[in-house]
Length: 129
Image (cartoon, rainbow, N blue to C red; front, side, top):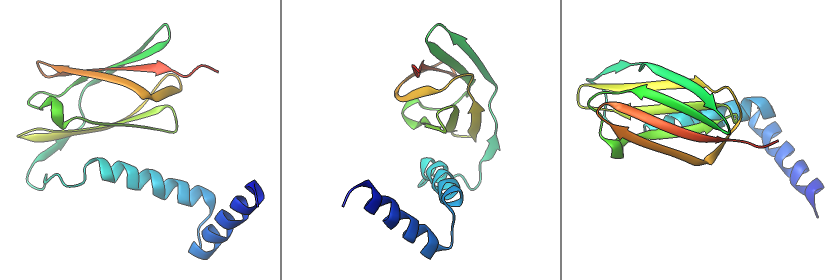
């Protein structure tokens, strides 16, 4: 029982679910994005895509996001497909949400951010090939 057993088991599971690997991967990503905002009541708030600026410097990708009124402990970040950053930031009057295509693959475990005066600054390490 090795990798073949695992591959066969996963294949059976996907076939039983009536879903291909690509569909299952998409469902997982959609569920991941939904889980970032889970438990936050935003039914009566305006939703807005924030102004975003992305640039690459050396071995880092930097992202600046305008999100006035948010609290820094309410920032939700996630990276999927190694080069798409999902941001969800609730605030008192509106929620900010965006999927941002990054100029390079990044290491999501090394993400750092700082929120100050309505601007979220994110720094991500570029994945070495």
